[in-house]
Length: 351
Image (cartoon, rainbow, N blue to C red; front, side):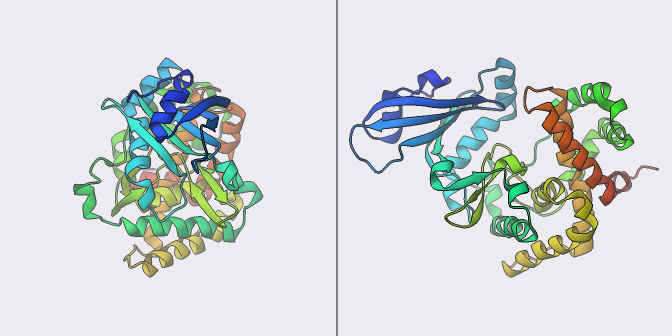
């Protein structure tokens, strides 16, 4: 069947074919375009079929430049394949997928997903739900995911399509723009990291890929997390950066962006130890705490890179004021963790 490229192509006939039921009408209740296209739809079925009255649909973004980026990075194809082939196997709360399809190039893709609000889920919980207990809930969920795929032989078999963490040229293109526009208004750490990354990009990415591989989400900021109030469990959405990679990519991204900057030195060792203990319970021989702390300091630079690149796009991907506030927090965190020094040492550079 055809794969819709625009919201207008989400017709009753198409949706009926996708779901295998008769659909009388489809009403678009809301749309959004960012790194991908999104639509909230209300569905009127010909008869009661047990399917939800509202659904959430992801498809290519409307902006041609953004569409080209998503195609070249394989983000849409990867996420659609995740939902159809892998999501039901995970020991995590993820959106239920009713239909997913893609073409070989990844230019066309579609996902018909659960409308999470209708399932009692809430979003942007880092501030309202913030507590050591919440942080541990997410880390425990990560440990379940990571333990289940730790050094899995499936990465050479049926999960070979997942692939390693990707190094996309867009950071190399946009980081100089961010440095030029904002370098003088940022703390020195911003310019130091920009210059270190631009001069040693390949080596930095090799560091970020070091360690035992597992299945990682890859993009664990607060906007990609939700909380299922009925199940009392955190959930994970937006799997476009799914990859084979070191577990600390997920843990570092989450803690760097969520744990209060002024609590990093005090609380991050205990949280990393908790995560390590959860891995041990699941049968994983995890690195010792000192090594996890070293990896954390280095992996924490990755969400900084994402925020800096996003800032270079102005308001196109995220509200720039929100990104600036995010960077302010991350800079404080990276300074506390001595991340620039740890990264420099790992790269073998002189101070």
